[in-house]
Image 1 (cartoon, rainbow, N blue to C red):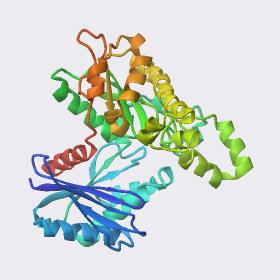
Image 2 (cartoon, rainbow, N blue to C red):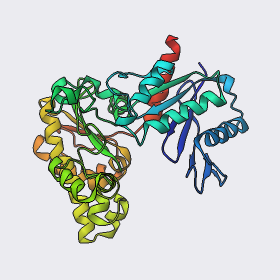
Image 3 (cartoon, one colour):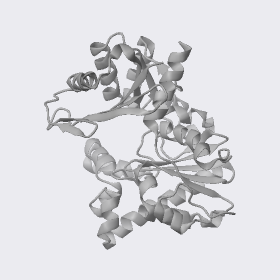
Length: 379
């Protein structure tokens, strides 16, 4: 097995990580502000170069890899993160015409993500037609949720259109489930509350290593207070806004102007913590309150709680948010170690705590590389 190139393509950026056969990171970088004031970042070097579209950006990434001695003939595969796999793509797959058609069919479910994921796949095929490609889906880990968790109480006709819960951050949660036993030296907790906290935030109830519930639903809007998203909101309130402002403007507010930004004027948790103003403090408390409140729902879905794990940019790096949430969940039997939390130690609980608590570094790219190697080994 050779190296695996993992690509994460967004609306205006492409992030990449090159993994060796042993999953060590050999090189990473990104093409940013595609179509605007663009730049290519490879390792510690940044060059401002015109990148009018994704094909050009990928071409420059490939050129940079070549300059670092990476030959495409030596790669095992290019592996892509795809946000939405819908009802049919429930596991990682090798790219085929059938898989591409299914990803395209899911565009209405993820209009801001799947088109850019497809663009990257097509661009790689154009630039390196002999390079095998694999795809991993953010929604796939949650396919194990019971039907009662996935269905909204809508008429069957609406469910058949795909109007149901899917959940996201699945690759992060799958990676966390594999990494935690290595960190703790213990088996994965039977009933684990996983918190992926970042600009996008969600919770996942993981029982016996499988997702049984998650806070995001049909779209990444549902659930927790986030950087710019409202989180869960009364549908009739949304209808009232749409009647007053129109659908497009309402969508912009709910997804891009709400959450921490709407409450405080900033979506950056680090800035809010440093400001210390009343609005900033309220926004942070709102974030933590709803994380803890939704945690109750996840714990009920698992029938109890044995462990807690934080991941994502905020989950891994913000001791105050972790302390706030752990304090709100202390009645469940978790005894937080304040000193360990301030130090950012992997273990956050005191010895003898009924419920364990951990920090687990987000390793989504490595998980995608694992998926690709497994697929190619079976080919």
